[in-house]
Image (tube, rainbow, N blue to C red):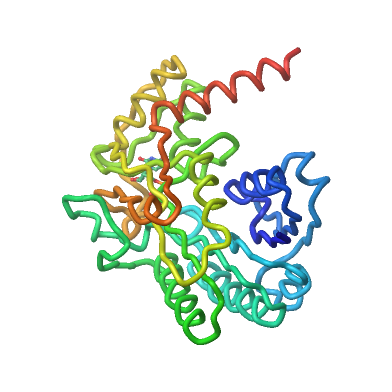
Amino acid sequence: MKILVTGGAGFIGSNLVKRLLEKGHEINVLDNLLRGNKLDKESFKNITFFKGDVRDANLVLTASKGCDAIYHFAAVLGVDIVADQPIETMDVEVIGTRNVVEAASINNIKYLLYASTSGIYSHSAILKSALSEDVLVDPRTSYAMAKRYNEIYLAAHHDERGLNVISLRFFNVYGHNQDNRMVVPRFFEQAINNEPITVYGNGAQTRDFTYIDDTIDACVSLLGINGSHIINIANEEEWTIKDLAENIKKITDSTSPINYIDAPKKRYDYEVERRVGSSSQLMKIVGYKPDVNLLEGLHKIYYINHSSHVLNKI
Ligand code: UDP
């Protein structure tokens, strides 16, 4: 297939592009490179790159010409950044997705896979069992509202115009080469530098961490599915942030103290006590679900970082 990946130079996008190239697809990437370029040299050589913003309708139209599918992953991301820029976040989501849908319609594109978020469950996550897609969502932030708006918009577009759509609800994706907007790379950086590891609150809040390779397996296996779907991509393991901090400290053999501090005020609306997902819908559709457990994933990151550090010194 010929495929456009918006946000293809970001953490999830660049890993997706690499895998799609390995599978023999022809890839276009549209990215504004605001946070740099995470595509490796080999991938970059083998794609057609469009530098710019998804809010630019003409650019999205050009970048998706002749494509069979679009992975729409461009977004403003990271709790601190989203909280500082709620208008920009909403604009990129709403205008960007509108442009992608319009381009899909004009260019006769069959499949659209959209990066949504487990953040839209918000406080529904207090439920005792793992979250499934039919749980009543509870978006309370601009970011979560915009993601939910787009899920509904895409489902409506499927019903009205027949575009095959999948909204992917990612659960705390982590892996090598992620930047420290997210908690896992942030704790690694603090631990490796033997600086205090900053746990917000008492660290009893939980998250479901999904390893990047598993996430990409899921994204790729969902390509070419007809219909309209909302699908969790979750590891189904619930970890406290305290345990995350302790394990990263142990793996890195760090002398960092673990400091329990108040979360920045702007994070309050985003914080949820509990988040764990069910991937049974994913399993039902593609016969697969994420299976790298958090400890294994953390070791992989440390090993990759450590070996590239050693290689750089040779
Ligand atoms: N967190 C933390 N210390 C940090 C950054 C994050 O304790 O320096 C916690 C945060 O309170 C949240 C979890 O780690 O409970 C995940 O945060 P992140 O921003 O990575 O993603 P979120 O799930 O909040 O979207």
